Image 1 (tube, rainbow, N blue to C red):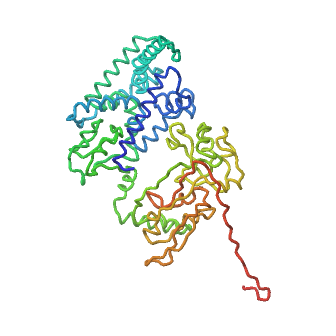
Image 2 (image 1 turned 90 degrees about the horizontal axis):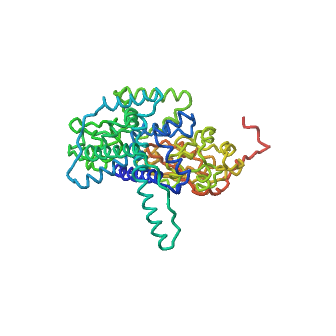
Image 3 (image 1 turned 45 degrees about the horizontal axis):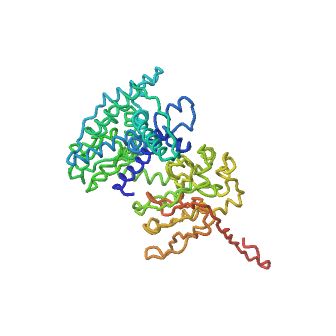
Length: 523
């Protein structure tokens, strides 16, 4: 996915969460299934945190998922999952559409105020009072606004429509009882809506970066995030397009810096930058390289490490992972890989309760929880991640411990013939093609030899061999993908089967030995 498309993806996800969560509060007929409700509420930071603290249940640890996402990608919660954040974005969009010439500008951070509110909120909680948190929690604020101000409108429309139909002799629509409206709650909700709307219309996401304690906490965490948006001074021409669309006011073009603690990961800046002056930076890698700026010293250390690993018999494997340049062709996965014994993704997602018992028991750690790979209803359900490991050929542990029947038991023999997916080979990413060097890691780790090495003649090295996939024999165990050394994109990967299939039984070649009893023993 190109950087310019990240904004569109973010907008789609945020609107999905916004509409579904808003409907939760106006759904007086309980149309939304409990499973959907649980999935939506799981990722709401404060409710999840409080439920986890009170119940000490891993199933209520959605806030940990948000923290992990923040450590990896920054404040994506604020731009996608938080409904109050999306409400502000809607208001910003509507007001900016009427004022086309209006642009945002860089603002100095109000760190004293926002961190004081965060500290005061924490002190209230420690003292046993959640009053301040309840007032400032974005999810609770949004819920009160919808419940007190919008839900009565829905009930009014329903009852008016029901009365009108009754006059026509139609009684399919029933009247709903009016909810008791508390003036204080309705007043606070109206006041918060006015404050949030005014700040959004005039100052963008100032509420998130000044008042909201969740925004302040995630802002602290985002300072160490894995991927951070940075300005490339050598490419940036100072056109100020990015600064003009930054709702957080965190882009300072005078200093060519981005305040990551206030960046809400909306990706508006990436969408408007025409010179690619903005890019993602691997902050963790930058720290490592900053500690070793001398290239000659770095090369000495690398070569010395390879030598020492060679003493342990690992030299050849280490050399394979060193490629001359990064791969450029992304993999195209059409379906995630569901666990062996699940039969199909539909059966798995419809039965799995995401208890993660299989995740804990998997010896190769290839089973990991998902985010949205199985869709919204399959959130947090496990899948096979071949970057983390591969599915052991003889292992059936996950199938034997599943408590819900989402993973049905298979014998070892049947499991060895169950095709979870099929390996796909991208020649242009393979080091044999790019570097004219031997590899074969994928074939070595394929238990069924569905990946075989075939001659690859070229003028540089006529003895080279390159992988060839035999789809009928592939079981989708991921051994080839996990072993493939190319980065950032693999040269071989597994595309999942939505419905598991039956693979052909691998052919075992017998080694024929001619024994002549008349000849002497060769040694």
